[in-house]
Length: 295
Image 1 (cartoon, helix red, strand yellow):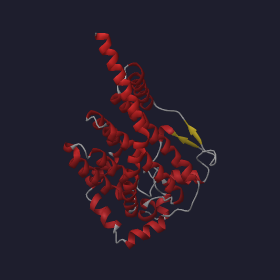
Image 2: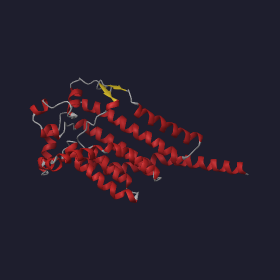
Image 3: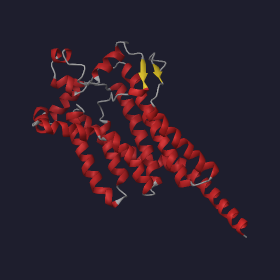
Image 4: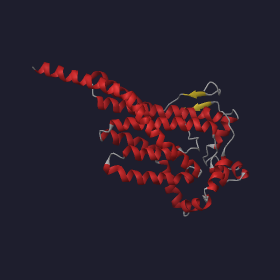
C-alpha cells in the first residue's frame, strides 16, 4: 500500500462490524470461559474467512496500480486459438432478455453462497473441512492477486464487446471494473474503500475458483454433493457473460484450484494439529474436574 501511495478508508458498515463482533465474542467465550473446541474453531473460522476475503480484496487495488500492460490482446488471442465464439455464447445466454437476468442472478450468487458454506459445514460438524476451505480460499485469493499484478486486464466486455467510442459513451449506471483500474493507474483514486470493494481481477477467474472450491467443500455431505456441483457449474458457465471473462480466464482459474487444495491440506496439518492436541487436553482436564466435583 505504501509503495503505491494508496491509503485505506476503514469506514465499515454495521452490517460488517456486527457479525465480526458476535463471532469474536463467541470464539473467546468458547475458548476461555466454556471450552468447546468445535464451536470455538467454527466461530474463529468465520472471522478468519472474513479477514482473508477483506485483506486480499484490499490488496488487489495496489496490485492494479503497479501498472503492468493490460494483457487483453493476448487473452483474446488465446480464446480465438481455442475456437471460442464469444458472440454466439453471449447470444445463447442473453437472448431473450430473461436469460440475461437469470444469468446475472446466478453469477452474483457467489457471495451469498460463501456465507452458506460455513453454516452448512458447521451444522454438519465438518469443522476440519471448514478449516481446509478457509485455507484453500485464502491461498487461491493470494495466488490470484499475485498473478493479477503481472497479467492485468480490463475484461472482454470492454476489450471485445465495445468499441473505444462505445466505452467512452458508456453510462455510469453500467458497471465495469475498467473505470476503477484506469482511476488507479492515473492516480485519480488514492484510497481503497473497504465498505465498497470491487472485483478487479479478470485473469485468472476467481469466480471459477470459488465455484469449484464450494463444490469441493460440500463434497463430503452426500445430500449436498450433486446439487452443489450442478449449481456451481452453472456459476462457472455465466462467467464469460456476467463476469465479462475470457474463456482462458476460466481455464486458468480451474487449473489453479488443484494445487491450492493440496496445499490447504498441508497447511492445515501443520497448523491445526498442535491446536487440536491443546483442545483435547483442555477438554480432558475439564472432564476430570467435573468427575472429581461430582464425587
